[in-house]
Amino acid sequence: MKSLDDLFLHFLQDVYFAERQLVKALPKMAKSAQAPALKEAFTAHREETIHHVERLEQVFEHIGKPAKGVPCEAIKGLIEEAEEVIGDSEPGPVRDAGLIACGQAVEHYEVARYGALIAWAQVAGHTDVVALLRQTIDEEKKADKMLNELALKQVNKSAATMAKAA
Amino acid sequence: MKSLDDLFLHFLQDVYFAERQLVKALPKMAKSAQAPALKEAFTAHREETIHHVERLEQVFEHIGKPAKGVPCEAIKGLIEEAEEVIGDSEPGPVRDAGLIACGQAVEHYEVARYGALIAWAQVAGHTDVVALLRQTIDEEKKADKMLNELALKQVNKSAATMAKAA
Image 1 (cartoon, helix red, strand yellow):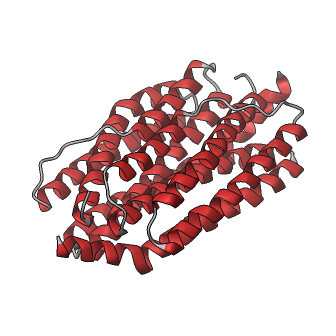
Image 2: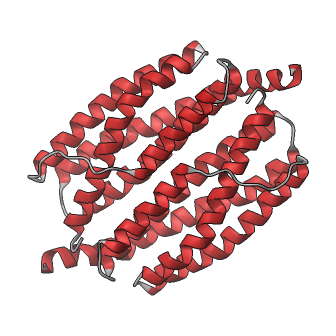
């Protein structure tokens, strides 16, 4: 990595890998959730994630590089954590609360990645690329906010009741 | 994980592991950075991170559990990415820009973790624990903001100049 372009390409490949892993992981998260609103949130976000992959492919095209992922250990770890929560819990509000926390960690990670890519594209003057990446970061932030509201308004309280009943 | 307390404990152990890994990783990030302000930011954040570990130990004490970490694959992946950037670059603004992006990803991850822990401690009525975790989340957010400003005001522009010179 000798230039900002090299750095941009590496992180673009990293987030491309991450988004494609998420397309695969989100159906399992939706299936494992119990609250209908959470199932729906994960399912809807999977649809958005498919668009994120497509937008990244447009970014690759803009910079004249083939769309290619590089293994991203962070996203693998984040997905592994969600699988751990699923494996160690029964369907219900406690698992749902854990899944929301895992989902929010993924969104935060992606916001960090897209934030860096946008800043680098701006300084390199790639206006079209900035516009594409902005659409995605806005959706990631919205998904994080929605998960947060679900936790605060509904899931955490149900999970706390479970604790008292146990 | 049958109760919110179980979930809280698991994520507490996870972030305890993460913070202790960061105490070990931050000196290498500081050493590998070139911009004095970035070196200083990583060094100062390492000092804060030592306090985060101590605060987590107080949280363990409050809930009457021994302070213990559980391997957190996400933080391992995030640290591995920073090491990859260091391994694949020479000292200078391009590496610094990459290190900032990696640092911000770590901060975002931690903000997600502490956010969930705070929400769960609130619903469980652990007021003292909430106060401890709040101090740390505020410092993580401040660290993220400082890295962001460093990137936008200084490092990214220098890195872009490198690209043009290459």
